[in-house]
Structures are given as C-alpha cells and as structure tokens.
Length: 313
Image 1 (tube, one colour):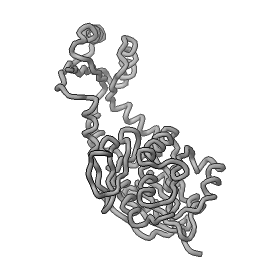
Image 2 (tube, rainbow, N blue to C red):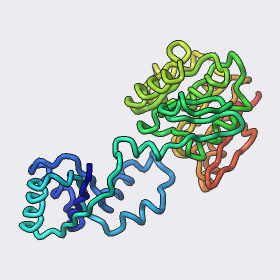
Image 3 (cartoon, rainbow, N blue to C red):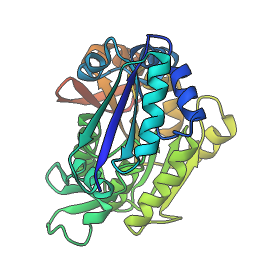
C-alpha cells in the first residue's frame, strides 16, 4: 500500500482554524506542527518539565502547518484538499512516501535497552524471541513515560540493582509506565505500589505488570496526588518501605520533599531522579531542609540521580 503525505501551510496563529476546517471536510487524522501551539503547551505545563529537546524546538521554529496522510488511490479526497487549498490560498505539497509496513515499522523505535549489569527492558513483542541471561523488564513502550531509554530512569534502575533485597517493599511515586515498580519486583522485592497523578498511568502500569506476571498483591497501581490528597497520603504512609522511588522532575521533587519523611524509616532508601544538573543544588537544599541526608549522587549526561536516607536524630 502506497501513501501520500499532504502538507498545508498557514499563517502563525491560524493552525487551529485550519484543523477545524479540515475536520469539517471529513479529514480527522491530522498532525499539527505549530511553533506557537508548542510554546503555549510548554508554558501551561511548566511545572511538569525541566528539559526540552533543542532539536525538537528548532524543528518547529517558524512552522504553522497541518499534515495528513492518504492512500495514493484516494484521488477524490486528494482533489477535495487541493480545491480547498486553492480557495483558501494556502500552499499545499503532496509527497509520496516509500512503501513500508506502517503498522509494524514503529516498533523499530523501541529496541531492547540493556541497563546496568543485569537488566534489559524489552518491548512485549520481543519477550519470547530475545535471548539473554539478563533479567527481563517487559513493557508496552508506546503508552506512557518510562521505556528504559532515558538516563534518569536508567540511573534509578542501576541504583536499584545494588539496593533491592528479597522481601523488600517498594513505593514508586510518579510511576508512569510502572517500569521501576516492575524492576523492583524482578530484582526480588516482595511488593511494589505505583502512584501517578495521571489516571491513564494506573491502567497502563497494571497492564505492564501483567506482561511480567505480576498482579495484586505483588503490584498495586493507584491514581492520586499525595501533596493534595490527605487520605491517600495516610494510606501510603501506613506502609513500611525499604525503598521509595521518585523519578519525576526537580520542581515536583522539591514540592514533595517536606512530605517524603512520612514514607521513610531509618532503614528506607530513597532514590530521586529526573533532576537536571542545573537544578541539583535546589533539590539538595530542599532535601536538607526536610531532614533527608544525601548518601550518593549518580551522573549521566546532564541528569542526576540522588540516593538518600532520613537523617538520624
């Protein structure tokens, strides 16, 4: 099956109107590339990110366009688009794409990720065919954050190789795909609780745990914000954890710092990651103020991972 990529360019600030008009013509699967939309999204969600790929930012500079895809046999629909572009005086380009199996080709973006000395993160479709002596962490990588490719996640997994002991109970705040909770169980933990603010993450993490053969009571996925939900906070704080994981971003870690001691006892190891080097001192200051002692710091590229324990009285 051959496909065509159609691109319609418009003025800055007009991309939403263009998308609405195209939807009205019956074209639903649209790809919007717009610098202003991207910048507005970042500004509205600033508390959830510390780092944006510079290449992505550069690729969107000056752009305001909509892309869509048609089979090369859809001549009538292509004619509708060309007439629309002519009427609206919009530049339009039609580019044939090389023939490929689009339903399968996306999987090429998710190769096995060997992490640390003993772990490998595998997409679920490679579970039965990938031969390895490493401990397999199996995921559906196309669903949410946490595929094992990011340095912040890798550093936590490497620290967990050294820290997890049989029978340990783990609390994973900001669990995303569930990768760290699953890793803890693979390494011998008795149980793991994953908590994320996004309700979709709860379902996804539970599904990923299932790929690895874990379900309740070994793995529990919850939705909530511990900084705003006191009943959830109390429920979680009632547990005794040997390991607490927080792999988010610096601002969220700083906001959580005053509450972290409620999950920690003298023998609990705390691992925090997702921290840019430029934000490390801010995080360390917040932890110190909360009575948490840093025991080590890992570095990978511009990211930092902090291991800590509650300060002894």
